[in-house]
Length: 179
Image (cartoon, rainbow, N blue to C red; front, side):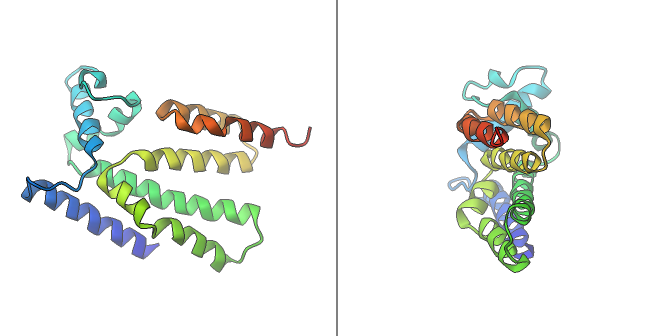
């Protein structure tokens, strides 16, 4: 976990250095500027949709307000934190659903945190890590038999991004599996 956190810190710092000193090359995800720009419109009393390329939930623009107020890289730090929280939740889910050893569970969680695709997505500023975090959180609360909270999280994540709607049928059958 420490190595995963250090990788993310180095890459976020690198992205901020590139942002400031290398105008001809970018590390940031293209949409990161769109999220941040939409947050700026909110602070001016407008709508995130005043930014003509904004096509996301308004929640994302609100989440990105600290980028405008304090520092451009805060959103990336939040996305990286989502990655780390996912690994923690993966460990909890595996502890609840398998009889694997603690070492095996830690190894499986490390596969998530040390996957180059995963840390590249979050350190570049892509919000998909937050979507994944809410989906995994939903699974964890459903495993803990908190159906209403799971339903709320499912509704929220589908509002955040539509593609998790594909999980509705398997979730329904899992909830109703005893009937």
